[in-house]
Length: 78
Image (cartoon, rainbow, N blue to C red; front, side, top):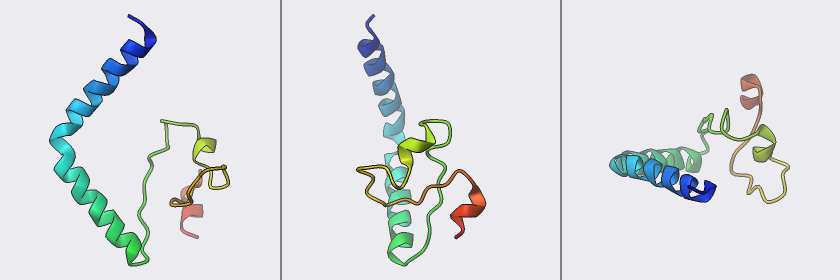
């Protein structure tokens, strides 16, 4: 099996597993958007362990600037 076929199969398995969670994902997304609209902060650790930190760097070209990024938690409170 080619790498792309394996990748596609794995991606489809992930998406199929998420299908039962869509209502909760939508509710959490709406809740997070409301917090941001009211000037609050939404915390996440989505880049920890998945992609290199520099891929999410605020100064990276093409980054829309929606998220602040730091390797240290105390820095995120500034």
